[in-house]
Length: 475
Image 1: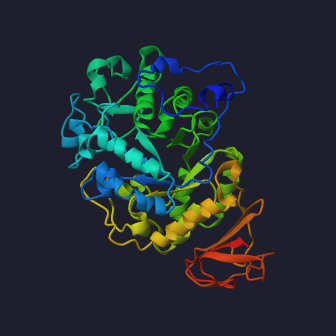
Image 2: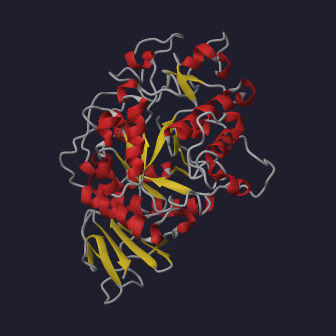
Image 3: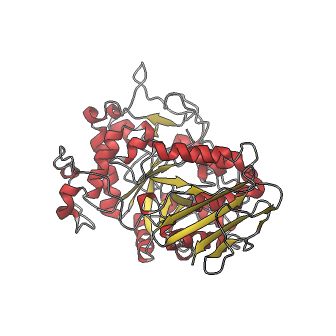
């Protein structure tokens, strides 16, 4: 959608993989709920990970999971660790066809040929456009064989108007004054019906949604979830379901499309750095000064904990579909901003087609595909991802280092910083200006013998081209 181990269970879950298929969701309640030692613990593999958002219906000409699975080796070779699948559930017929739904709300957003995937009809079903459950399971198995994790896009705040729950569990919904379904208030999402989360424990919604999420992890090997508009669903639910999921897979990974520090206490490993992304757009376009990045970093450090993973990106399905390509939004500074997103802090995201130099808007509810016949930026992103793996200083959260700015002779155009963790040390310099600059870094001599080596971008230690970037690491 648009912007808008448990320490007490360690012995129990240390051998978790896939729970028995007849495991009851009711068994997945928090044990020792008053245990104050219970805390968030990121999966051991996650600190050095990178993530890739796969727009399945547009990732290949076929638009199926079987076709997408053939591209997994390329993603693994590019250094991707997590594949985030956009919603895989069946979508509403109102959404798919356009027109009016049963409550006479116009499905404005979903009137395209395919409909918006963020309008599920059944949380435990698979959109037949993507294939069968056997093909889904094969996709997961192929990903796991390559060392990749797979997380699903999960829309918990609302469903399609013709979802199975609207017929079988109307009590789950927030109804209007005459007892009818209604879209989320204060939004333009006319094609979806709002669930009643305020009364979710009493009306059974908590238990039903938890059961659906456990189903995908337990029965189909999913490694976690990217949770759409997570701020619209109560944090207590997210904390409850995280515990339930950990009892099935102790290394489950959770991403919130939100910027709430409270989500990181027990529910989510990572959240969107939306504010940072908007600044990327503005700074790249020359509309905001570089000082806005400096001030943002100060606020970020104060607002979020050091072990809160944050998602950094230059594009995703929302940005590409609604606001344009990287080139449209960032112009000649697109690559420099991608370097910033890949090295500043947190975890870097790639979107379908990004390494192919995606030059068009992929409306995620319409039929279109990405052309992977050439990958003009494949080597660029492969190297950027490799640095994230190789250099501990660039890892997410407390496993990595916080960026420290380096003074330059051109602070109005150049942003430079270092990150150091143990023997790992990385220096990044970005020139967002229209002119070449002398590369004078206060207290640093990148060209010194036995010091640093250039690993990405300009190899000249004394001059940086306009819109250029250079990354160095200590030998």
